[in-house]
Length: 413
View 1 (tube, helix red, strand yellow):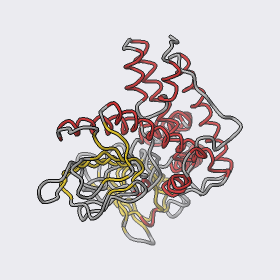
View 2: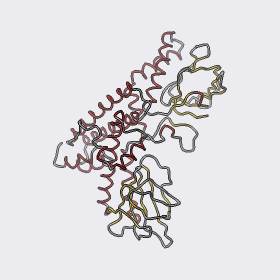
View 3: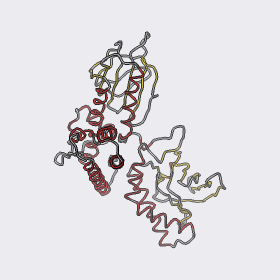
View 4: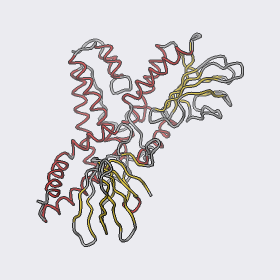
């Protein structure tokens, strides 16, 4: 399937526009579509492991294990690319090959977003995320050029032009030319999750400049990384199409940074989410790498529910609970000590309320508003309430009372 477009496709691959660009160049076929789905699958798995590696509290043996998983996903990804006829260049000599290509200001900003130091333990995280940054930059430039925009270093606050921008924190911003009162329509999309309204009208406080924030009462952003203006007068609806194309392709494959994800809160809900943005990839890695543990847990739990578990099996299921909780936390899923949690819901939609301190009790309500069961004097020992992992409820005298299904979400006191 190799062709003369391969050299051009190489820089697109593993970038936000990879799927759209490759499908357009290769043409749609059952084989191509399947390989492109695999590319996306392995890239998402890679992102999930990178997120886990960004933890500063990761034990050295777990870090090494995750690095081995990362390498397996890379090999699998490269295999898909080879089948598509796309060459993949690696730099085994310089562990910060992509990171060192970034401007020093961008490097500092990227490390701050990830919350990791520039130390050897975090080189894999920094370099893969730097590759993503380079990807975003290249994709933004390519689309802007195709859509009739040109780069500028500055846009006057009063200029009768609109603009398209990419910020250092991965935000896309489009502003119209000003109306008679200076108001500009804007569209806003953060690749890592929207913190601002997606559209509105703003009044710029100052000129827009590369390396500086967009300032207005309505919207203030991180520093502008790239600024483009239309080469000729373009209607607003045409500019919106350009913005939507970029937003759609960027968010389809963009990896997620570690900022704030562990404390993500469901919109309008006080519950902490089991799923963080793009967590399907992390969940897939959890099930792939720890599938045997989950399978063994499910069998032991069923034996316990049926009253057929023996003492040795009960001890094993406690060990498995610790193991799966640790695995889920290290892949970035939300977790809190039991004393900080007031209630949680499992995958079976059973609702548990934790009341009291010492002794601590649990009130269980069955799915669909069924009867409440009070489980008294509960101790969970060293366990932590962790999304996508089970919890063992133990009485103060050491008896195993209940083994929950994996936690779906929880509420913090």
